[in-house]
Length: 281
Image 1 (cartoon, rainbow, N blue to C red):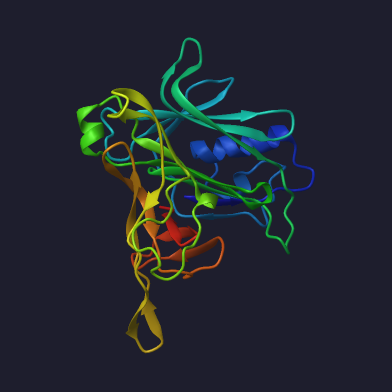
Image 2 (image 1 turned 120 degrees about the vertical axis):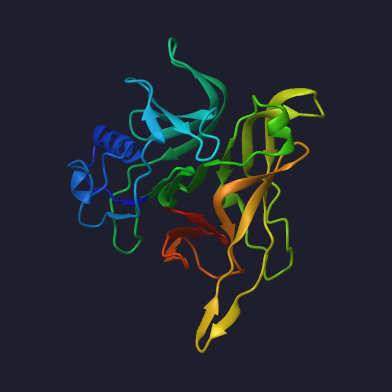
């Protein structure tokens, strides 16, 4: 599900928090369910909410569990949103959680400072939030934030060292367009953080920094006046092996400009940025 969340000028911090919380928990599947601070006229919802994927695990902090979309029997990770008096300041991804003390275990925080930005038609200001069984994504152009917390697939490393996390944090603003086939595999070697994974170099678990990999192609004619847009799966480099990034695909160079929405051949919505598309449903 993609929520193009727009706010009214009078939106309070409490309304902002309530709307984001309800979007993550699936309590907003229609724009009429937004708070009084939400701009119900200019907000839009695409796709379907993923049931049985997210739960709030603490009534005070905004901490959520996320069940892995594939390894559902033994992989649940945790996401925390931290607010100050005016904005969403930090998003944290953690491998584990201790409920008695409300403590994240083996975590990585990222400062985001996402502000409440009233909707302006010219700038299309607001926050795009993807809540799917594969990812939780926040695109907030007014705050310069394009961040995803995304399930990744097993590799030989994570299967052997099973305490490794199967989620990553990706800064999508740190994925520049390299041009047509200037680099057909490595899209960028930075911007990805895996909070907790086995590292053969240090002989133990640690955080790892990597980037997005993906084979680039070009559009091909598929008929008179039409072309095929190839969507190649994206991977991230980790310590000794590569992991699939679920729901993330590399597109031909400059297929879309900026942040756009389109439907693929299976009639599923996708959100794009920097020659990458993210599966909404």
